[in-house]
Length: 192
Ligand code: HEM
Image (cartoon, rainbow, N blue to C red):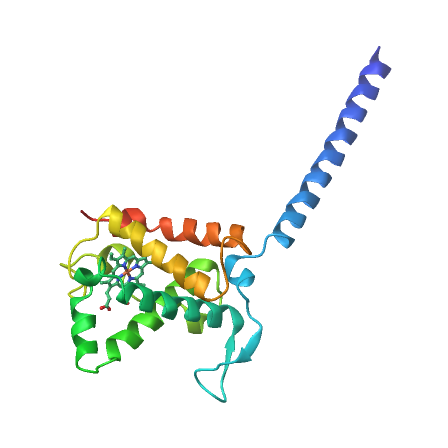
């Protein structure tokens, strides 16, 4: 009887060891086959920066900057968005692009940081999402955003993605993941 018990516990111990090893391997594999969104859009591979000849840029940032710039154009052309950007549009009306350049950089930094970029040169240093979208804290924000306009804004970024070759037909999961990431900001940004 004692021997049987000993045998049972030895087998139990061996089974637990095997299980714990298998689990560790699964975790490693999961991490290895689960690249960050930043890696999926190009990652840290250095490429020529078409906007700044003679300088290099990470491919991930280049993709995100292109998406942000396309999206800003889509948003600027959307009459539903006009009321939110009075300062930016009045600057542009006088040919002043300083605010536009700052928004492009800031939004791109935000997207890099949010998608998992580790390069400190691309880190987001702007206002938190709540303050950035509160007209009392950010005078460039024309009024508080509502849910319908938030949805439209994200749709405009979807159009920006598609303009850069990322769409639901060729990269459904990537589009879904990026949209889901944008929706993590909804409760901070929708303030009316
Ligand atoms: C979908 C998620 C959104 C993200 C990730 C986002 C991100 C940002 C970022 C990073 C800034 C710059 C903040 C800074 O530099 O301190 C910004 C500014 C701004 N955002 Fe958003 N935003 C989002 C949605 C919206 C929506 C829904 C609206 C309005 C409907 C909006 C309107 C604005 C305006 C008016 C500014 C100031 C623009 C300027 O500089 O003139 N954003 N946003």
